[in-house]
Image 1 (cartoon, rainbow, N blue to C red):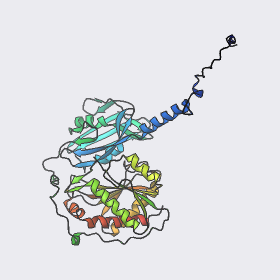
Image 2: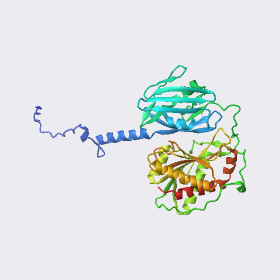
Image 3: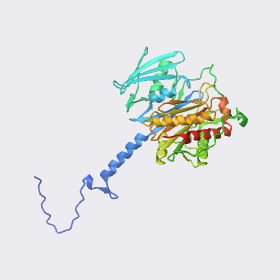
Image 4: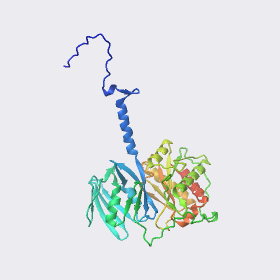
Length: 395
């Protein structure tokens, strides 16, 4: 039984000290317990949303692709599937393939560069990487599994690739760019040192057909067009064209074509600003967009690669996303554009709450395509074709 306090004998009025119990303390009328919980949630959400774009380049500055860099337990990670997409052996000097067995957490990576081939094996939660015929490599951070997706520490690329296939991979001091190997002497790479090297193709040489704009029969169509890159992230810069500028010009043209017939199109950015992938998707969700289209441009070490590439992410709403890609594909082909479709878990469309597609409109490393895109008529006709696909889409 608790001991009772003896009543005070003084007649002086005293003010009782407030209880120090957390549930009674308040700041501006809000219990501090709630404040602490709220602060913790904010910190957790901020950590979950922390993502950066990691540009992948050759040593001569040719863009290979981009990786979504996430911070997990304080370390920088990239998704193995994103690495596979970027290191495909066509756009860059290294080919990366992997196999994952979730039941035992086993990851088998196959690397290839010209005649060099190697296999590396590791496990989720283990920092040791076994390499066939070579000494093992020890990472400072282990591979992790997040909802069935394998995430590799960035140092897996910088440490394992040089050891296995003798291709250097360097991360810059800012942690925003990976430089992979060097271009071989017999590889033909477009000269991108001078922005005035090419002349724009005249209108008569633009092969794409005009497409009259039509209203969408789907009353709920609200499109968010994301112009890729921006700010300090220029994307591909070749043959007098810069991806971030060209993507924004095309996005604006799509919006103009749509609005001419009453279509609802918004842009994630309408200025030269940097944005993260979560920020871009967040704007689409904030505007209650029903369709999301990321617009980019491509590049390759092969100067003959050309055409557009449509990619969907295979998300929970994958069937709707594939129908969106099909509609865009039909619209572009009808106008005379040539390209292909694919399904990959790209950064730009991963986690989208609505049907989403990623469009790489052309290869700026192709001299022929670069000349066409130096002519504004090409952007206008591409925008018309894209809107034709969007307006024909049905969920």
